[in-house]
Image (cartoon, rainbow, N blue to C red; front, top):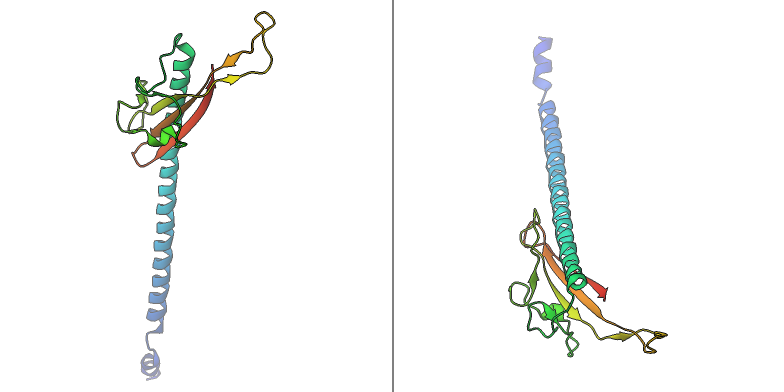
Length: 170
């Protein structure tokens, strides 16, 4: 008889507590999964950007190699793809070039892995700079030419775009 009375007093509180605990554990699990997915996307984006940066460096090196190994440079008047004078309007040449066309830019011809497209670059001939002093034999100041190389590259996808510039003295 005593056993029947204690059974009637129980209201199922253990079931309610266990369901609440299960709900809390589910919420924690879902939240940690969202955090893990976000971190995975961030790591993928970082890798993609790093790949684009390295491809952009390859484009810069190709432009510098061109300037170093071309004995007689052509005119930098835009008649050759990717070889320009700086604009006189104050706008940046690299900002006004159509990077998707093959006629206004030079495409890197080397082999790169894990990039959506090979990098492209332009070379601008900057104003000559007279160096201080002069030659004892000739008596005139030396004139150095400077060139700005701008490279645009993408990583594993077309959405990660990196633009790099370097100045080359010849």
